[in-house]
Length: 138
Length: 145
Image 1: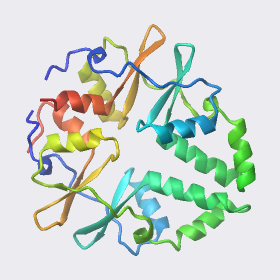
Image 2: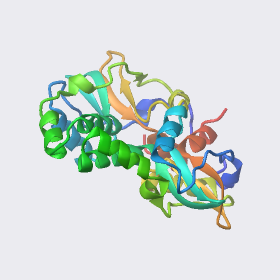
Image 3: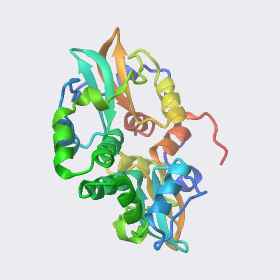
């Protein structure tokens, strides 16, 4: 295994992304429809945030405990969007950075997904699964 | 690095566990204070189920939706009456301690689990393995066995 290869070789390039004004309902649907656990938030092609499924579940709970009541919660969801709940300025990596560096970041931070950004443009995402597939491939 | 290494060599064997009759409040505290995402529910050395932090967040959310006032306090009361055995996931995928790392990787790639319990030949829980354990093994130069 060559840990000096660039993450560009193993990253996922076809991404589902959302915009800062994407509704919470839409985010909910995306997590239900897909098996992924992270959605990058982009303004045109610039990465502005990331939403993990865990963050989304936590926030859903927080809204419910703060406000209580089904109707109020549903109204809150309608008014809220990705920008309200995303993690801003997420850790990121460049496509020329090495697979070894990505592994170090995952190990230290117990993260599972890193957006890949070149010159301020989101070009892919690399996950712990991509690294495992690479490391344990035939 | 040997992708056919047995999972018992790279799993976490020093486990925090919950009892089936432990109240959810206590389970939640264990997850938070130990910074873990999953906790196995055991009867002696036999694993009965798993509870994840995501399960707890989902439950909190559902209960809270039906409380119009004092939601936090209500949640606390409900959580002090629900038992681990009542909400744990009982249908488990388990690894044998002699299964290879590569089998674990294939299971994680399905993206349905983020932690798998590991049992020995007597079906006793001996460890848990996560994608991070597999990454550590693959990307650390030397890991003492």
